[in-house]
Length: 338
Ligand SMILES: [Fe+2]
Image 1 (tube, rainbow, N blue to C red):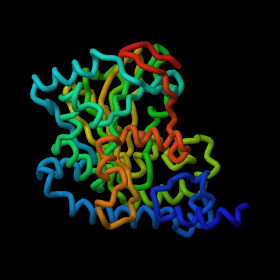
Image 2 (image 1 turned 120 degrees about the horizontal axis):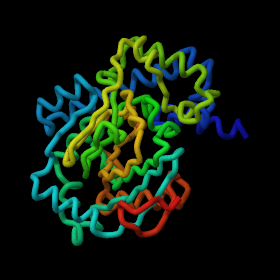
Image 3 (image 1 turned 90 degrees about the vertical axis):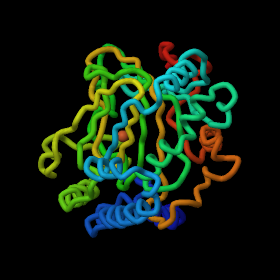
């Protein structure tokens, strides 16, 4: 069987595949000692720099400078106040078809969004998701021109806090640049589990490469599943050894947008109190090895306004399984159903 699968494992090397468990070639201790993992990182970083050059014109110079320095950008007061109020009402007043996932004591609720399905009933939300300012920034940071997947995300953490929430362990999502965006509907205070990021950790330094090489030789059998799947966890002591600062928590006001390269180390601050928080979440990740920014299947006419539905179809066909299960129609601030 391994003989039959071997060509598929090899074919996955020049793609975004990241699991050290699922692919014995990517996970091979010997190949990674010889530098397979670090070679993938170096090539992906070079291609990301190239593709960003193709995308930079649509992003203001000050935002590009902030991103180059920190690995993320924060934009308070992103929408005009009246437009933000409209968007907030559209989100909170009506029930949505939702999915939920439990990680420890934290439940993440997702509503997959299609711009096509929103234009009539939720015009402010459709305008937000289609805005050039938002899309250009996500694409620049992701270093690809594709269509981001957007959803409404609700984080429901109970009073036990989030000590068993894997998102609270500082980690990198994968081995290459990839963008995530959060647009906050409420204020998120320091005690409410704000996003955190290690400033400057999006850069592929010699120290990071050395650390990655060490991780890549043992990741396949690592006790933490997420680490073995290619989202490496890192301790505060290791961050220090890499010459990086401690993570910075980012409490925000409502109507703030954060876009981050989650190749950099990031996480969610553990929340010492029950938290119910609602945000618009976007993510964009494509093959990191290609020199072009187009040719994205989710950007095809007829698909790009229906990315949420396309993801549901891929889930049902078993092509791209999602960790969330459907829980029916509910209002965004309803108690969890799983
Ligand atoms: Fe992450």
